[in-house]
Length: 261
Image (cartoon, rainbow, N blue to C red; front, side, top):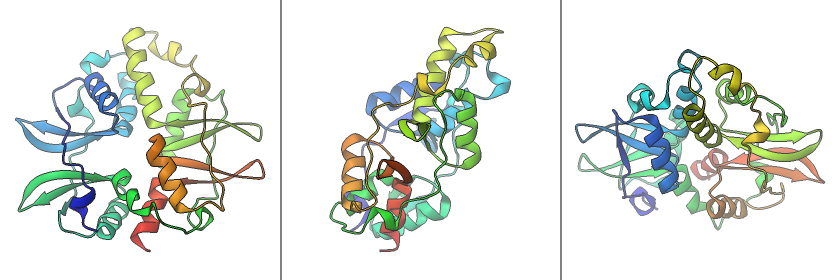
């Protein structure tokens, strides 16, 4: 299958000089996790929920209104491209090699679309291999009472995109970068001023986590995992066996399954 068959040709962009609050609103409006960034109508980079969470929670700027934090301060200028007629396995390998979640699709040196991990996992909806073959067994978790800023730091330092939230041995929620970005953007509007830090420390993971967590079994297929992620627009599934959390499988894991199948 060729990249152009799965690529999204509807390019959603934002100007680099726009406030980050506009980026958050635009991502939520279109139910996407990244935007192409433009300068003088030319695509120059990409900004994601991860980028926004990093910037909006930066300690040195916590007293600044989100109206004065701009996309230009946090977008990535690294645009990795792939040809429209390339095979999707090549796309998967390129994402894994560069540790990114999207590629710019070009045809005759012209940008014609964008392809993401979400697009690529559509190719696995008939895959009968088991979740246990590709899931991560070592799972980083947080408690519901963990402060949001601490959870943000864990995501950044561990280079992961989601955190299962556990109370004792019970899985009670899931936290990801979009949860943190949305919260920080709204919080900055409500709590500007010198006491920003003190007010923020009152909030914990349980205030913003997703509580209705969808799980999967290690004996389920990659097909089922891909279908669940696509249907519910989520990027990872906690793996539960005999009532216990035994792993996690993410879109990146599915990407690896696709790249080396």
